[in-house]
Amino acid sequence: MTITTPRRIAALALIATIALGACSGGGASTAPSAASSAAAPTTAGSGAPAPSTAAISGTINVSGSSTVEPISTAIAELIKESNADFNFTVTGPGTGDGFKTFCTGETDISDASRKIKDEEAAACATAGIEYTELKIAIDGMTVMTSPDNAAVTCLSFADLYALTGPQSQGFDKWSSATELAKSLGSNTVFPDADLPITGPGEESGTYDSYVELVITPIASKQTPPQESATRPDYVASANDNAIIAGVQGSPSSLGWVGFAFAQENKDTIKELAVAKDPNGTCVEPTDATIADGTYPLSRSLYIYVNKAKAAANPAVAGYVDYYLADGTISSVLQTVPYVNLPASELDATRAAWEASK
Image 1 (tube, rainbow, N blue to C red):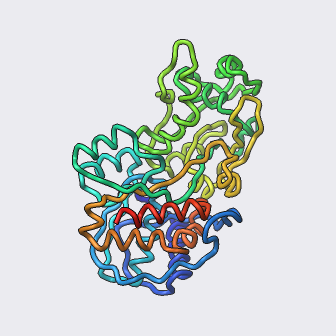
Image 2: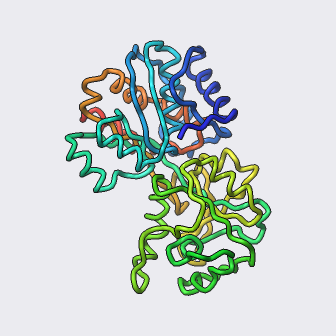
Image 3: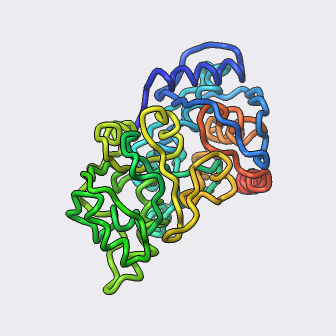
């Protein structure tokens, strides 16, 4: 999915100004924006300017996670600013859809908001595609409601399961989840209000991460064990802006989306604190809580690089070199509100990339 809001365009201009100060034509996708947010003190390269680009020419094709798309697009734009012969396509149909095209050799790099699944890795292996997995940043998933929904401020994983899990199908009010939540140990009092839910579809890595973190651990312990999936009867979308709009559109809404997209719209949605355990400590999603892992819905972000394409196409290798150069990601994350990796993890990513060459 390509998102082209005015704030995203403004952020791209700011990134380019900070890093290069030049202006030229762009590629096939537009970088998103958000309010500038400081990275946690322990993160790598925080505040460093983006490095100068070496000469890079050629064309690259990147697809996958709509969550990672803003980072990959902004970095491609920075390269394009000083390399007129560099061209790119970056799209964000979702992590799962990205791996489908990556594992048939249609793309050079796959953006991902989760690790590759076993069946996806098998598809790549069957097609003879070898890849390098590179962790590039940290993100959180934000659970949201309308600012008008004063009755809800924090939800535990048990609450979220009771509201959005496979056993909640048909619940059309928040209060309908009360009995199920209590059976899971929660004392949360839900309002007697309508429960319109908008969230990611199954093609999204955000959906997969939510199911992995919230749904599966509880579903697997039910008698009988339940399916590791959300309830099917909610408005699902691959478009993060559509999810935000769905949450904005009802005074008692519920939804979840990547932290960056929620931050962009924090004036019109209400971010909820989350507790991992029933009646546990409520933690709000912030740069600091996502970076240190105390926010329960934190996750790592990745790019997967086709080894053969990187060896054959200097533009692919040059793009990844620049992506991982000191200061690149941290400069982009000044305006795209994800969280920098700790220095040790970024060093490990760089070492994995160098070893793959």
